[in-house]
Each structure stands twice: as structure tokens, then as C-alpha cells.
Length: 207
Image (cartoon, rainbow, N blue to C red; front, top):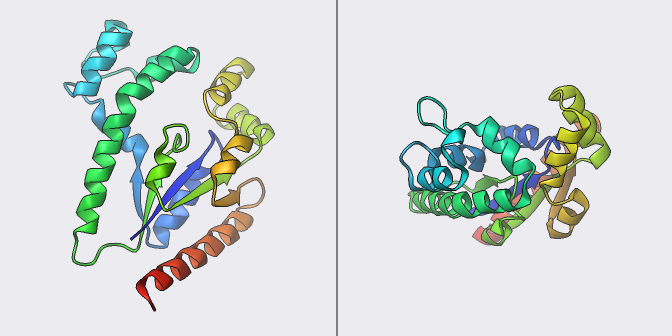
């Protein structure tokens, strides 16, 4: 079983690549979904977040107001670090447990993808066999955030500043998908990546 760590930056088009890999047969673990699960009302991470950030970030039903919390952490590096320290260990624990279930299957999947926006920042790149970066230049990221999400300049800079620069992420990548042009270009690169992964699996299995 080959484990792929897929990462990128905000508005780099990672979700598009995830869909392509899923359609090819890869099993996807979306850590954004896992992150929501570990902060459900009553979970240990939920309790720690409320204790640190205060009751004001709760919705009427007790759930965390993700929009309000996001505004806080995007503008406060210390608060962002604290949130990551609370959430990331729980995500990793859940991810490893789910991966073990797959490994123990009679016919485990050949390719598993960890879809992790902060793969490198969280040190989770050490948990995978291969790091794939979906790249878009900062200029294109800004353009997409402005027209797709309707963010103003200050909001855009805050979000970009909350993540490791894309040029820095390149240093950790085993394979880079440049998602800056036409969709056909991205499809071609994903096809090429899949061919590489298939070859690696064949060599591992001795075919």
C-alpha cells in the first residue's frame, strides 16, 4: 500500500487533483473532514478549544463557529499555533487508526492519499511514502481568492500568510503538479503521476 501525502496552498486547486485521483481508484483521507470530527461537541479537542478561545466562539447548539475561529487564527499566529497543537495530534491519531484498518484488509488498496493542507507545516510529510504538491503561484492564488471567494486584500494576505510559502513547500515535494493553466494540463500531470505510482507498486510487488 503506497501512501501519498497531497498538499498545496489555499486556492492552488488541490481539491481538483483529489477528485482526479479518487476517480482513478485512490482511497482518499480528507483531513479537513477529520478535523471537523475531532472538534465535535463534547470531544476532548472541542473542550480544549473552548477553554482556550472562550465561550464566544460557540454557536447556539454548542458547536464551534468555524468562521469566527478562522478569523481569529488567520490574524494571530500564536492562536493559530495553539489551535494546531490541539487539533493536529487528534487528526494524526484518527488517520493512523483508519490506515491500519485498510492495511489489515484481505485486499488492501494500492494507493492511499492523505489530503492535508498543512502536511509539511504539521510534520505529517514524514508519515507518507511520497509528497505531492499542487502548486499555483502567489499571484494566481490571490486572483482566485479575490474572484472566487470575494476576499479583500487584507483577508487574502492573512490567509496566504498563515501557510508556508509555496516556494518553500517545493523543497519538500517529490512530485509537483502545476495547476496554473488549463484543466487539460492538470489532467495530463495527474495521469503522469498515476503512471509513476503504478510502476512503483509493481516494483514493490515484484511484478
